Image 1 (cartoon, rainbow, N blue to C red):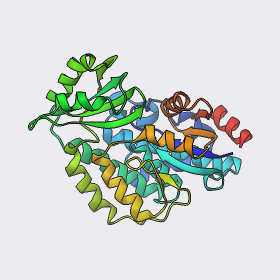
Image 2: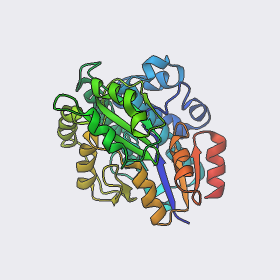
Image 3: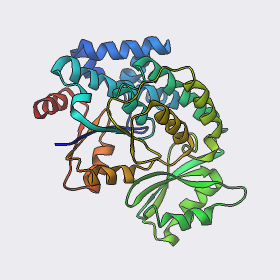
Amino acid sequence: MKYAFVFPGQGSQFVGMGKELAENFVSARDVFNEVNESLSQDLFKIMTEGPDAELTMTVNTQPALMAFSMAIVNVLKKEFGINLKDKATYVAGHSLGEYSAACAAGVFSLSDTAKLLRLRGEAMQSAVPFGVGGMAAVLGLSYHDVGALIEACSSDKDICVAANDNSDGQVVLSGSMTAIERAVEIAPEFGARKCVKLAVSAPFHSPFMGPAADVMARAFMNVVANNAQIPLVANVLAQPITDHKEIIKHLIEQVTGTVRWRETMLFFKENNVTDLIELGAGKVLSGIAKRANKEMNSISVGSIAEIEELANNL
């Protein structure tokens, strides 16, 4: 058996996440308390009580999703005696989820990961004035075929790039608002089933995020990092790395680079991963995995019942 543990990205958050775990396990409360302390904020209250508008602010969403994922990791370890480094062949995470994966693999401490994600959220939000850029999901076109649409929407003034290559038939574009709105309008002419503008506050994973990448590069200089105890399949490579300097380098690149998730799923398939286990909020990544590889067992784990079932099966 080969297990890949994966961690969700922005969009999977929901008000109430972590409440059940905190009410039942000290090991989960320990994680939420440590994140609160490191950020000097009651983030757990926002996670469990909302309001939704506050939770969906990028500066809160990013550390909140990581905190929930890491609470599950800690519950598995402390309550069920399951340490990821003994079970996982690979870890990976979608966008901000890559920080959760790095934390789970022992690259960064929980406290440092929370601080890095808070800073990442702030830097990504402030990199571009609100309304200048946006994102849109193109459905029904492959990464290869979406190139012509990107070219048609791009110009000297307007940036349009593939931000997330999620799966065959689902590519997310990012760039200037003019380019994104044009993509929504003309995508059917290029064979897309539809193109939907996303409710995001900035053009993530695009050249617009250059200032945020610079902020992260400076931040990593002050963080203690270790080599990964579990090979981490990096977003911008779709290949595994363990050297902490390489992981940091590619996390910085990831701010402006494409999340190569379709290729990550292909890597898992080619390397005979039998089980993909999504730890955290939502079921987005396990859903993508089910469509990408029918032979791989894909599950999402977020509730106590799901944690118990996973622990029994491992």
